[in-house]
Length: 235
Length: 235
Image (tube, rainbow over all chains, first blue to last red; front, side):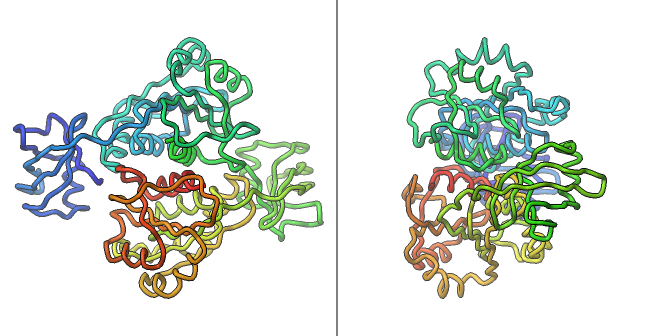
């Protein structure tokens, strides 16, 4: 946790917050902080700055806060991911939030096992928890939007062309495609497939919706690695 | 497992292998393969190709193999990592192997907790296991070399200057540094710090050994994410 994220409900005055829950545990056990110390804080959806720890008890921490700067810019990207397996999903949500992706769409694909859609990690509260961990890691305050699309065809036919319009549409896919471009200075819609890749029908549909297949070399990367590698190369 | 990795001991003839252990379990449970099917294989330290499953029993799988192409090229990089916490270490080893890093040096740093050096995940057999998972993921056959340096100062003063000589030396470090370069076409020595970063003394020592501090933006990334992001940007 490189940033203590406060929520509006934690504020007891405009410049004062009281924290309990796992954040308090973190202050005690990881920061091993004492009254008087300064911590980096941010207000969820708002600005960031520093806090002074006024009071620390086993039950709560009281902080004097001064929020004086904006969170870091997001990447100009909409990321479309075939729903990863549950354990990977949690890490990918953290990575997506940490790297500054503002919108993530979790999509079905032929190679997504049906059971993946049953995981409790897809519940809004569970998604939010992982996104918060990513924001705390990277020092950001703005939650990405996460959209769940359980039906591939209607999404890709009816909604994706509109989403991808006016952006550079890219489809990360191993094979004989042009290499993934670098250092773009324009909005991007980027799709990354499931383990085992998109099937040819899906590649066709995604291409028809405006996404051009590109590759990162011969190596097959795990979804989480592919996400950070592609984003770091694109922007 | 996108590649079934064979070892010399699995070969019963030049073009025939018998597999047991976790690879057999994988063939049964994940591939759900049957006799006659074809699988991608590679010989550890050697070439890659296809295998035909001749015989599959609960105890062993017999394969006819044809190895006809070289593994993918490695990146021209030596990666220096402050030893990550044990759970992260395992994933980082996989990522390093998957992305094609040929040499990894695990280094001490002021912010590496002493207990991290006690983990059983640092035993040669445990390191090898994670590297193999990375190779199987990415479809590579050549194990990276992993060097363990428990003493920062003698390593950085005495050995690093020689290692970094003739390479572009870079030190991934948050702060007011030049941005990390892109698409290099030269050998690189890249150092990535611990959670919390290198301390100023360490940055000075690493810089004196030839590594120039560079940054990837305001966001603080987990070690695993930083590794894949920096490598994807550099090469």
